[in-house]
Length: 174
Image (cartoon, rainbow, N blue to C red):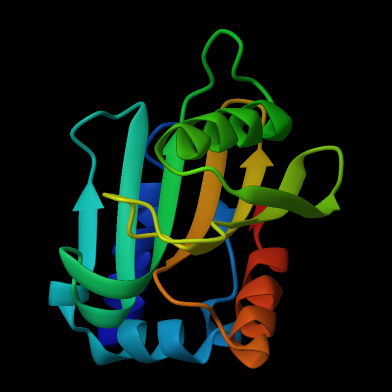
């Protein structure tokens, strides 16, 4: 019951910017994420809809809270803006912003007409930048853009990476 309520609120939050589109994904493919959502531990979940055109959910999968984490899933739903209409557009913006803080290497892992999945690695720690590696999936709909971002302060094992990539690959618009 706790999972149904928590996941329902979580998915409702994703639909905020555009009620006609909703991103869904199979959280069960990532055991650590499933464990957090099944636990009902709201201290590990942060929901911010202060700007209805840019709604953010953060779920800590390793750590104590959104302020004290070593691995987390960030889910963002946003309304497209001028020059920001496709998955590739948002990927380019994310890359630019991250490289300003800490230069890194980006590799596109999968791409189709409406989505792009990529990985970003910072070869060394940068001052003020806790994220060393990340896996991302941007999905573009007709009236909204969605981002699933896995942030990790430490390198992921091959098994953890595979679980995250399977979960990201399951993401689609309803």
